[in-house]
Image (cartoon, rainbow, N blue to C red; front, side, top):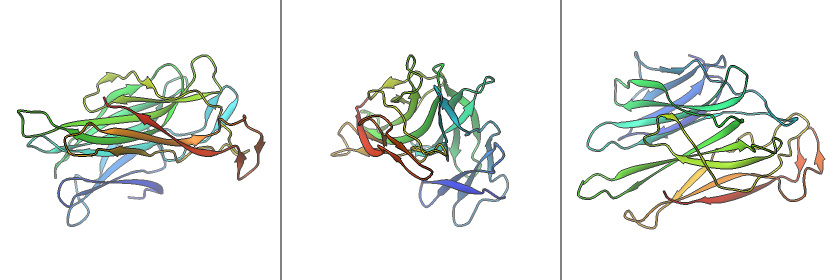
Length: 246
């Protein structure tokens, strides 16, 4: 199977590795490596609804790149889970995010459309992080899966903000929490701006401490978009915001 670019990798249990990628025609597939690449029923079709074209933000067009992410979540005494978030669209063309889950074993049953992030405005650039917190008296910790994304401002449509939500047990419609002030994107003349923003860092001072999450993102807040060329624009910097637990 040909997956033309931008794959995502995550380590599963033991020496298992998962690869997520697109075939370039709106389908996402998950492949499993465990002493060799998986054969039938692998790779698994996750969805035919993947869509990552240009987002129009109040007249500012922003291109998107590999708009999908995955994390592996350890199971409580059983198989773990691969959690996937990917870009899709509504019937009217609005950019939304959807979630899928796959069981971390050789069978790897997958369920699509387990949750949707659709606040009524464009959302894009998902990032995922996972941490574990004690859950006594159980010997197994609770997993905290934090999802983060860029969201179009509700009343100033050319601006975006960073939002987040806990996704470990998400289902149906997900409501996010605002984490930053609004910023005005500053894309190149071809529309590139933050197209690879996909990092959500996790820090825990000890295994029993509450985790801290940090979202890195492209920052153009200094003085508005002053210059825009084919391959660069100004201002474009890198910023990070702290996303508290829970």
